[in-house]
Length: 258
Image 1 (cartoon, rainbow, N blue to C red):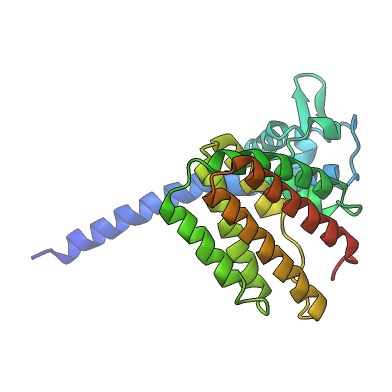
Image 2: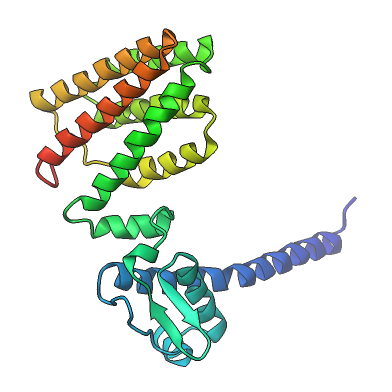
């Protein structure tokens, strides 16, 4: 029989471990506040390339954090190319060309200020080129089970023209299978980031025009499946590239926020 004293000792030990873990995590959580605040100011243009950030003591006072936390926050910014920390010269804001725009945090903030859709346009170009090559490679790699799953996804898409969120989930699953089958792990990682942060579009309203757009999308996916099933990688690549380009052109024609 386990004594009450033993149980209490065990609970005390567990609580001690949790406290230590919280202490370890706390600086990282606080450092993210510095990263998000200063990162937003840099990406949003409040701070310009060449500007020198306040000193560490000044940042400690501004945020109310310790020097350890401030330094960790600056490391997060530097690691993503937003600033450069130099001994004796301080912390300098870097130009946009230095930013790691494939970092999910940086990309997410940058897209918030992408008012002219130029960044999204670049992302769609990268996605189109990568997915074309990946679809071409996937044609000879997809198993019968994967081809059947792709066909099932298209059939499901054709049944949910009134449910945009469900349609989009099926669409993403389709592309994921094709990309994964290509065996291109680097391309898969890059396109996943683009899908997650650069592929989101406002839900379509339930109108005849939007349903027609979803029907075109489903038809394009069916043609891609047919090419993949036939082992025609070149055609599959061209079809998926044309699909991405056409849907993005269609999206750009829609007023923002609709």
